[in-house]
Image 1: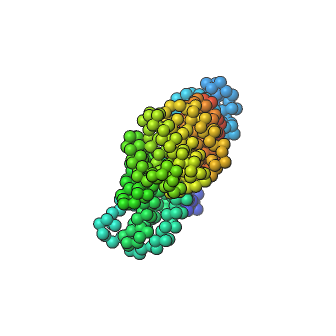
Image 2: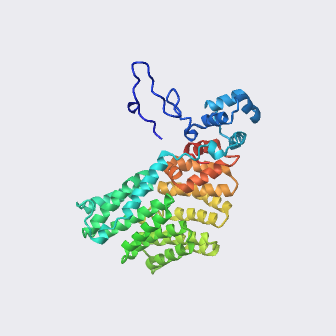
Image 3: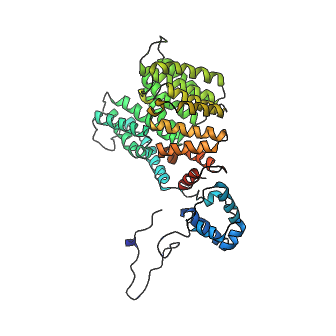
Length: 432
């Protein structure tokens, strides 16, 4: 919440009249007493202590601390880094730890994200092209310029700059639709790529049903071109898995993969192998979600054979497919199959390779979130905290804008042995 500028407040009168302060504002204009969720954690402790009518001395006695310790906490001189201490304070104040950390406060970035998703929803709700109605903007942009815009949006996504992608997608979708309506030969491939990007972003943001619509649009636009259908099926598989439809995800991925699989086991272009191998990975992850360890292993081994022929450091059709990508998928599959120790082992083995650093930031950060879940299940909160901090360093938006990442962050922060860095990050993001 932004504090109102002074220019909008009434000016003091010459007869000595002072305007009444807005409710909750201190004499200095700093702090909103009636909105404790907006305060730093130390100030929140002071707020709730006062609400409970406890003096600093009485509160300190209940905690087994000194009055000086309480005073320093409330003034922000001493930080609260341990989950156990936060829980003790919350218990003494008779409030939930989440309230103490301000969990109910929605960060401004998240509020802006919701608004951006609504604009994407509106863009996907436009059917002027299908109805033959005049487009909102009558001028048709040049197809090559729109192509560059789509390319730039994909690069921005792969650099994990999700707020920027959210901002440009509505206009980009409208531009691509105008190019298609104009009858340009470039239109259909651009439309497939724009919808693929939209689906990938929406799944990342937890907007699965809306992502399904975008993936379905991509499949429809790709009809008649097996390669484009295979590319769109990658996002369709992601959507199905995210929505709990693992069987449908496995079926769709395998159908698309074997339509473009090379007849010669040792042949095929790098692009076709990358798409086919990525679809096999999607099918393997769906099989793991279903608990089918045999199918998971067979599909990943088949994908690994294709990855060996493609090599490292390529990004055909936005897949980043290669041996390292397949081994990261082995970690994710092991996690879904309930073997957290194996998932951690694959993570630690694979991320030591040089090729790990060649993957797009988005790919690496997403894997680190999965690795954090594996460490949590392996009862290693320190390891989980370490990879989450690394994910936040590489790609802050992955942790700050992705619901799945915020969930695992909260899970790690609740552990009594959570690292101090995780407690601070969780408090800064309003999760617990």
